[in-house]
Image 1: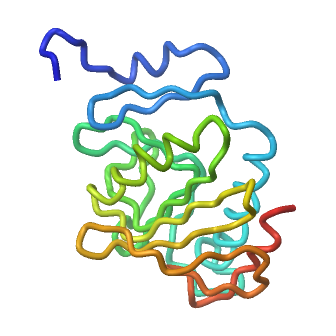
Image 2 (image 1 turned 45 degrees about the vertical axis):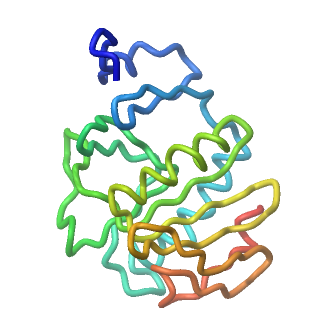
Image 3 (image 1 turned 90 degrees about the vertical axis):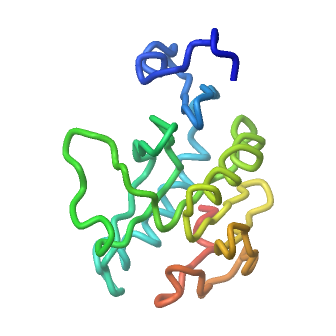
Length: 185
């Protein structure tokens, strides 16, 4: 990195115009338009199907924090915000009140949109592997699929692709079947 180049900060994110979302990953500021209604709706469905049994413990084992667009701060990355992220409560016993989460998630989920597809696949997916996120889902709204990955020896191992499945068992939430078909509204 050019030493004359200013390293982006949270202040740079705060200064972004309305309708623009940003992340600073490994010292680089990335910007994109904020996700629109269809993206947010799929995110809500995924969060509910996973959050009810695993965060709230309704119909499942509980034991997780499942959060939409959490502010996560990791080494050399003062702001990354997956569409959804989850932490086992044994690793993150309480959620910080007034500061970012500084623990690598156990699971992340990115929902591909026209404005985020390249960023999610080319920047964030390899970054999540480098920092040690153990499970990653990629939801492709256009294809109506969810691809499930597990980190093995620093690389993503594809475990399965789901679309119209009503009782998918997807890691790390395979204790309870998930109605993937309902993600598409």
